[in-house]
Amino acid sequence: MPHHRLRDLAAKYGPIMHLKLGEVSNIVVTSPEIAYEVMKTHDANFANRPECLFAKLFAYNATDIEFSPCGEYWRQLRKICTMELLSSKRVQSFRSIREDEMSKMVKTICESEGSIVNLSEMVTLTTYGITGRVAIGKRSTNQKVLISTIEEAILLSGELWVTDMFPSTRMIQLMRDDCWWWRNNIKCCGVGDGRNDEET
Image (cartoon, rainbow, N blue to C red; front, side):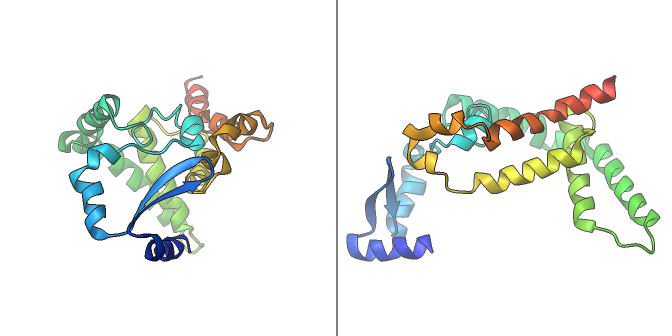
């Protein structure tokens, strides 16, 4: 396990280490006292997220709230998100959407009496249905494709990519014809196609 290996290295080299993974320098902190200094006392100096190929390709050059660097732009995104999506007033304004989607799910379950129901899939569809209606005003007609693509992206976003350890090789990755990011970013943008299909 990686954290066990880091523990062993810390026992040999001390509670703060410089570790170079490929071309990228990393500072490893293993003591609670130093971790407090990093995470609390000097958190602003360590707040930036590491650059990764996933964020550049799948999050529009890392410009969304999850991947954008800490700074004025990110603070504005957080402010907009809080005011327009997460405030009590806004959450309550989406209540009718939540109730409608939940009613549809319950109705589907009732109509499936006597047969096997994939509850996990239904809850996922309902959750994405609520999210889609809140974000763009209606469900996507390509919802299952969108969900499967997003779920795959979530899994891949947590993987360690060679291009993130060797940034100089990113151009080679981008030149590959089978690059997952290009194919599936287009597929995810299909939510827009879904809107167009409904409008026409």
